[in-house]
Length: 317
Length: 304
Image 1 (cartoon, rainbow over the protein chains, first blue to last red):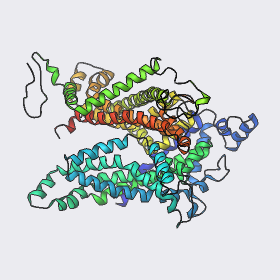
Image 2 (image 1 turned 45 degrees about the horizontal axis):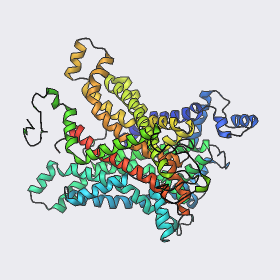
Image 3 (image 1 turned 180 degrees about the vertical axis):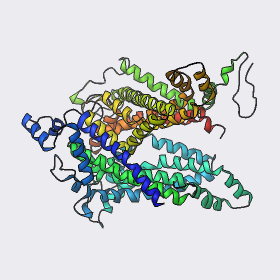
Image 4 (image 1 turned 120 degrees about the vertical axis):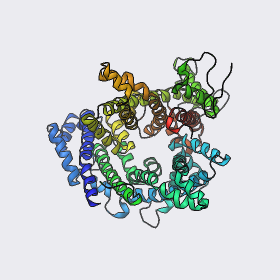
């Protein structure tokens, strides 16, 4: 098993190289003069020159790339253009309470688990009642839910649940662990509603694929009840695709719900990206692209290892 | 005359003198779609939107969409302006109708470009295998490793805003899924007898890959294109909110939905309602049509 983990980790190296290369080419080469872009529209020639020297854009291209790789390896991403803060501090925070990563997670993790619970339960019910009126109408509702832009949910949720009904805080933030739930309730509800449509459809498809398998017929013919078949056999076999989806979504939990955070003023990573975009903060966006991608790769590694735990058919080579 | 039911799950085949190719995948799919009432309705809804977009573009419908009127800022829906006006006094209904053109354009070219890139890479990787395959697999693994929204943000941030750039960005970032599908299909096809026969009569690699194999995977490409279309239309809205969408002044649903963030606190709901409504029916029609299209065209799912 450890051999596999090592091999799998080594496999990440070429991919990591590719990611740095694409990010570098995109930001330092494709966009024209990065110094001019960082300085903004109304910058003087001296200011642009100053930034060029400060961020090393006057060096040859391959040296710039090596600088970039050094930044990634040493976790030192330099400073933000607009706030002059160290980027690594901006991303990981000065204390756990102020950490954007943990802030994002305190929104997305509970919301994600809630979504899983709700959507898998609904999908199981639909699988049992497949072909019925209930099944068909829920399917149509899911497709309809998918046809709204996610922005619409946020706007209407904020306006109606937050403002009109006055049940929840409209926006704002309190970093203390015991008080932040106040500001997180409404975004969490919206996160769950946003994920309903696609998740129910996905899990329903997975369960339907399993329900026609031979082992289900065997279980039925030896007289097992529907509940046992569903929860003991189908659910366990469906774990592979479920885990895949769950882990694919994991890095997005770190990234936070970008739009939701931006709208509700939650200072998570999503909010940070939004702010950086507004301020055209080039080094912050570049650093976050690479960092979040690395986190994503780590999660992918974890999935592959998890597969082997769940499914003995997957052999570790 | 009429249709002959050969067995329970064949389509009604052949009027008299029907050609043999009426049993082809495309005819089969056509009949399946025609039988599916929801698919037919969805199709006509999409056609309606296309006509609306063309009508707006050539100036036949809502020609005064850009007219501003300061006295009429945020007028509520009335007899002259059925869906009210926005903050510059422009007619919301006309803006939303013209937004159709922007959305369809971005959807068509964004998804189209993704299909072209994905098919090219997928075909090369699947057909040649070996080193070419390794390189392309490495490339798409890398691209798919960067979370989609970050990739789009990075591309748009660097390349700037605007309609053309938007299509380019969505195309450059959206090809991985298609590439995977096409590569897999080409790997299955390249050793089949008909390709060997082509080799025997001296067909070139290009001919084999793009004249002989490509038609056998077009149905899958069409499904991917249609799926991509919806994704791109939705991505446009989000990019607009992030300030990475179309140029200012271009009528777009994304811009209208984003303006609602300022409008809703003033109880101005018609801008959001119009853009959401227009977008809802188009995307829903696409979603429903895609479902039917996939069932009709993907042989793996047949008879399930």
